[in-house]
Amino acid sequence: MKHLLLIAHCPSPNTTALKDAALSAIEKLSLENTRFEHIPPLETRPEDLLKADAVILGTTENLGYMSGAMKDFFDRCYYPVIEKKQGLPCAAYIRAGHDGTGTVRALQSITAGLKWRWVQEPLVLRGDFQPAFSDQVAELGAAIACALDDGII
Image (cartoon, rainbow, N blue to C red):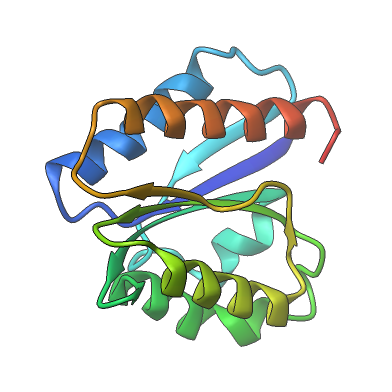
């Protein structure tokens, strides 16, 4: 059985809706070979990452960077997993009030150090919140889950 881990920071109703959209889309797939779970970044431990076969990161853009909660996750989990999770398939969505450029750069820099493998460019949800954002995150979650379940990633 494969394991998909969603690590999403949800400080608002809108970001909670994004996380819920991803989880709902994955649940509707009735996957045969993959189980999934969401763990908030402040609660994610290295052991959680070591069990994961793929990860989706969800963060807000804070002052042109990822959320402090996501940065805390990386600070605590980076070294305990660096040698053991090289090549881990990853994807991300970013709820960006501005352009998300700094957040994308930060995530790509940290994951490059971990030698994780991006299976899709980060999804940047720019500007004022739109209901379509939930659809985009649901599509991302479903695509990653299907690819993991089918052995594509």
